[in-house]
Image (tube, helix red, strand yellow):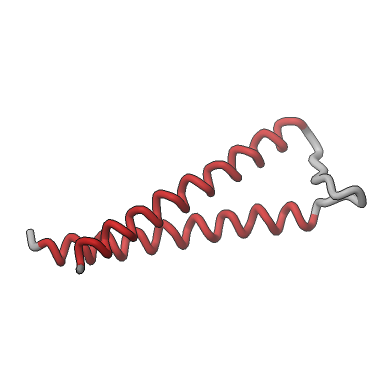
Length: 79
């Protein structure tokens, strides 16, 4: 397989993964904005919801980092 073709595939895939991570992080920030108390603390109904929210926050960071790294590898393959 040609190096440029692999680079393009990684570039497109990395862009899609990065976009997914960005959208997930944006949803998390929106939820925090809508559920913030007067003291600046995010309110949750149950402990389980707070755990799930923290898991989603960390997952969004991982997805975003993996997407950006894949995007960079794709750029290196193209050029």
